[in-house]
Image 1: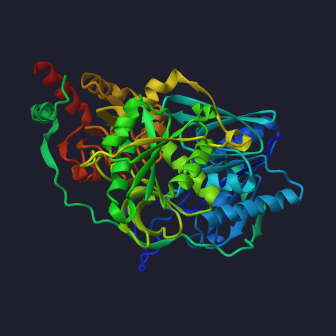
Image 2: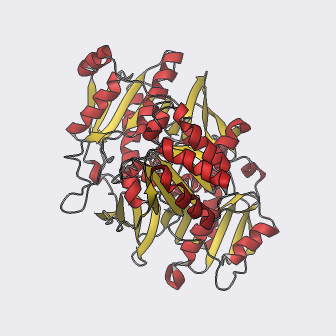
Image 3: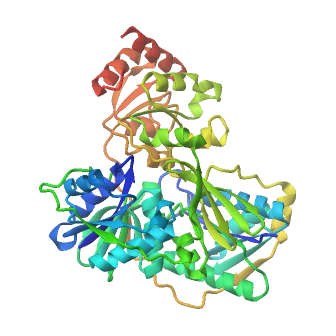
Length: 256
Length: 322
């Protein structure tokens, strides 16, 4: 029975142009909307399949404001059974602070009698791209961690984690309890069903407050670099462009 | 002074690590000199010569045999020890998965901040860096001042160049005192089956990729044919892998592979920010799209306005003529 905790983050949808707040301290998501990273959608899917195979549970956790409940409810609609909202403004919390707050929430949960066997986080947040929260969390909890993992299976007390390495697919066999940072691509996240959505509306969201005050992100300012002026050379239209394309390929020396 | 984590590939210092060393060297007398390096892997004459060429003064060789099978926490322990021995105040790694992972473990061990994907140092004292966030769509200036500044260098933030005068590259052994905890997440085995597939995309000189414009998995026939004809690899946008038209390991983008070919040919790909994050470091980009105003078409070096299913066969035919 593996109890899995998945840590997610509400981030501005950045598939279109990125807009900053007037003070340049944050990305303004008011018009683009909010989402979670594909890494985290895959983490939820992995958690659901591990819990399903072992008769365990999936809990979803985020650090954020009331609005982040939207992402928690989504996770509840695709396999999580309960949710934890750590109340705080993510712009005040650097990666060290986030790891501290999650570790505290896990310790509290375990002290209350619910073990957390496997913690999954995204490999990197889609907005701040820090690439470190999962590893810091593992150190705080004194647990092993594998990064860049695409698939997880649990066999007794051992998690078998696979990911892509420089020489091929890598397999790590790690004793539970453990942490993994998840990369998109190894599993297909499910879509919420109607019954899933109904359940998600009623599922409990526990609220906790971190005990310490955050040390901060170190952010001074954000800028969106102006796109360089287009210097594209149009080689032509349709099939008629082929000779110009091949001449360009020859110039680059990539034809064989 | 600066300590750089250097990764090895096929017995040589790999390109991203050469870039990281070049970046560290560019910090100059105020931060970057002398330049020390810990080699993540075996050190032989070729690796030592690479380090010397790049201007490294001291090369740390980790001798603990337990390090042969990769474990990020164990390498972080070696890096921690090299940090102490060298007296470095700045620790630099490449932005590769390994470089980032080991650096994050060191950051956790020392409980110090770490900046990922740095593109420039905006102030040496106090140390401020500029780094890529939101998949490269924005830059963050970050305060990294403190006793120890840790950062990874974004791919192609600088071009790897040899030092004006080579370093001494004096090899110094580091025992790397490991605890059982450092080895709890050690690589168990490598299944080489997919290595050809996963490795080719990031190493290919030419990548030919298709997007929604391919229309279906069958629509990749010409993409495959052109990739084969140019000795390159096939890539795909996220839409394509999500729809199951192509396998996930071919995905180019923020959450897929970040590629660095000499030539990237993007066929029927609109070029959303997340895709651009994965292909922006290509030397030359040719975009083929029916929409002349698509971001991919305006950001590319070369563009052909048209349906990839008409343009690609014509290019293949023209290549056969030549």
